[in-house]
Length: 191
Picture (cartoon, rainbow, N blue to C red):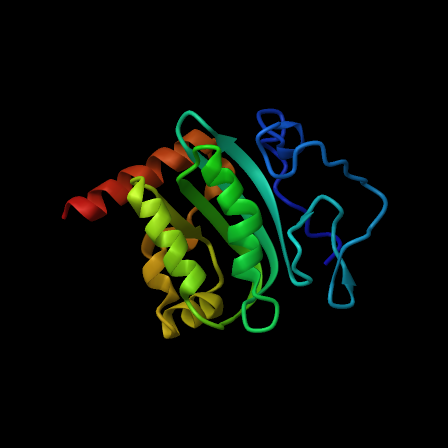
């Protein structure tokens, strides 16, 4: 687990700790001191703690003019015990929405499991971003995690599936990813 680090090739263009509008502004990281853990496994110190003992994130890129952010997630998304969606929504997404972000790209390759509680925070997030012509897209979540979302209809609050299941985002620039997803979203709602 400690070797899984957040994607870092865009750090020359954006870092959340240097962004004064970011919820992680001013945060300092160590490359050598491992303080966060997922159960009994230490995790890489570059992951950001959002208040959940099982879900960690990294804001990889934010563009305030275009109104989008790209967030990588890692761990276990556990709404049943830890109410992870509450931490994610209240402490991160609400903060970014107050700064003008209404389009969220969530990358879930490193999300190991999902445990359901209820959909009130998902519905609230969906309503808020929809009011401002925004959206939330889920990229590259594992099949079994997507099935867990689908079984309890949480998937209806996100744009996901199809070509997004294997979207090769690491080889693209943030603006290219955003334009592809934004264009797809606009076509989806025009039909």
